[in-house]
Structure formats: C-alpha cells, structure tokens
Length: 241
Image (cartoon, rainbow, N blue to C red; front, side):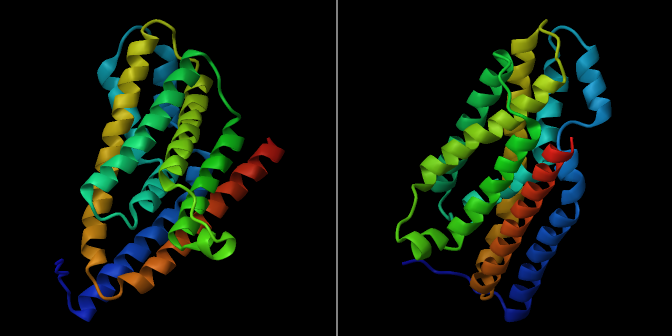
C-alpha cells in the first residue's frame, strides 16, 4: 500500500503557484531564447579561435547549453511530468540522452545539419507533442496512445540534430574535434542531470499537494503554449532570414 503525504491546502496552493510562476518566467524569456538559443557570442568566438583538445571548456559549454536551453528543459519536464518511479525516469531520460548524443556526434562529424530555424521549430513541436500527450489528447482524439518511449527516442534524435546544426555553424577546428565533441556531449549530459535534479525537487513537493491534478492541467497548457511560441518565432525567422 502506498501512502501519500498530504500537505495543508495553503501550502499546496503555494507550491502550485510557484511552479506556474516558473513556467510563466520561462515563457517570458522565450523570445530571447527562441532567437538566440545557442551559444553566446563570447563562447562562439572562443570556439572558433581555439585549436586542439580542450576538455574542460567544452564540458562547460555543453552543460551551459543544456541548462540554458529552455526548449530542451521543457521537453524533459514534459517527459517526466507524470513519471514517479526512478527506474521509469531513468529509462526515459536515457532514451532521450542516447537519441541526442547519437545525432549530435554523427551530425557534426559528418557535417550533416538541418536548418536551425526548421530544427528549432521541430523541437518546439516536441514540447507541444509531449504536453498534449500528458493531457491525454491522443486517446481522446484518436482512441490510441502512441508509444511514449519510441517518441522520446525520436525526439531525442531531433534535439541532437539541433545541437549538431548549431555546432556546425561555429566551424570548430578539426584539430581535436572528436575529443572536444565528446567532452561537449558529456557536458550536455551533466547539464541535463542538473536540470533534472532541480525539476524533480520541485515536482516531488508539488505532486503531494491536493491541488496538483488541477494545476498540472494548467502547467501542461502553458508548456504547449510555450511550444507554439517557439514554433512561431522559428517559422517567422525562417521566412524573414
């Protein structure tokens, strides 16, 4: 038998409001993130100037990219939103990590990228897809539930192409490229774990509140809105560029 700790209604409301404010803050920052989601100009200049193996700087850049990548974080949040067991969470996060690691490394190594506007629009769609999945939309609309693990892996591949496309644009020196790419990818995974840890701390407190079910619906609607916002900016950028 599972016992769920109940917090007073006031604390439950406070936790829920805190999470919704967090979502609103992310959406407020979204306009800048949508147009300049990649590496900052200073970091970009550093990447383009160096030669040889630089493990620590690329670890840092990979972690920084993931922690400040609101689209990646929102998708990751959507993936674990209703996952309670650590084995389940580890399985889904691992699938996402495998997906984006494979396409990021292969994409840069073989210089195969996708237009940044298009791939970022697709990443925005992945947030929409997961939010709708969390809302049970596919069962209501189509009468079936897509395989969530396969979807997570596929979107991991697409997120990886987003990373690869941005790295290719920076024209990294081939000297030490493989080691630097691996370091960058390890940094991305470190950043993902840091983001996941922060998400789980908030989610674990929020889930035990009586208001979670009602506020979870609003949170996923906000996630979906953020995904549409990113898609809109990227599609507009594609036609304006």
